[in-house]
Length: 119
Ligand SMILES: [Zn+2]
Ligand SMILES: [Zn+2]
Image (tube, rainbow, N blue to C red; front, side, top):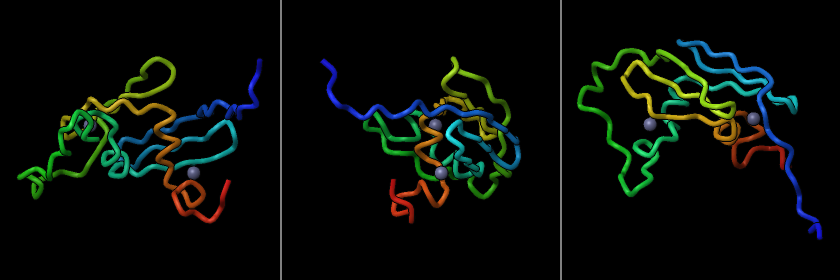
């Protein structure tokens, strides 16, 4: 009994290019290209602490904000074949960025809410 459900194609990156100081670029299999600034990614860290899941409000800016060195990626490690874990130079490393998350937060004109192109 197959319902006529739309079955979205798997969204997979064709290539991920990570620059520790300038951001992440992803070429997607469907021909889409995304470029994420470091700060943009850091602000969208999907971990429970940053996203406020579990009822914890996102922590306010640190009191040392004035001292903050330029944001950088320290290390990146693959998680399975569906995500990467980013360790930031501010010591934070619990964010696991799935491919799906990357695609959801794609900052390009086409993807952002209210963008010009409707799907
Ligand atoms: Zn986080
Ligand atoms: Zn996009």
